[in-house]
Image (cartoon, rainbow, N blue to C red; front, side, top):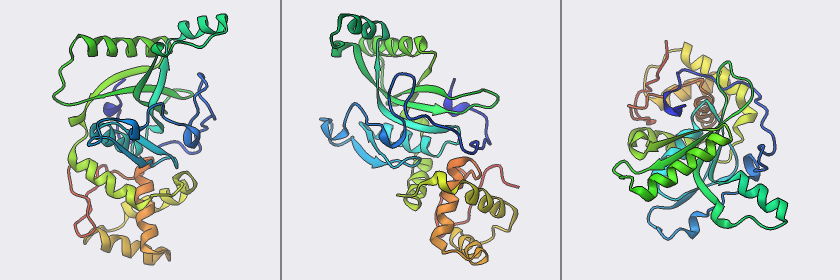
Length: 264
């Protein structure tokens, strides 16, 4: 599976049930803790910790490429959970350690960059998709190639899909747009506002979009009797769920026209 090539538009189903833990005992949502902490990373210039979009949890990105990817997946309607620096281990080694009553050697544990929990059309249940993020110019020597092969093998044994994505697959324009929308919903539990965001998006798509974004938001806010800040929140939430698709090749700014993909 290639997460960036899934067909669009797609709308996140309402009220997808996310269990407290996955089948390997690792928590979802706000209870999840990355196995690696960005603050412990020696590459201080590239690491970042920042609040997520779909859950009130801090993401740990060990490089700018990971930061762009984590933010993009927060606005991907197929994705309902994003877990960074996920602990992946060899199940056979774990089973042997349990039989012996000992701890599994740490060498059998590795951290994969991102595990996405996704919903797919006409597919029951949840699917786990692992993403390894690499720099656009990175060349894979034998050590890196073996590491990626181990990741892929462990994921296959779990019946999870896996892929490598390059940093340049997350464009600068889309990253800036996503960062702006994230600022509109920072600290907001988006899942509580699904229906309101859907209604707002429907109105936005079926009404005139003349003028710049700020004027558009002001018009809808006045009609709905809500603050303009709330209109921006609903816009960003609608994007998370796939009700709206801001054009990734256009600049999203309050003083510029709004460009939407898949809009009438």
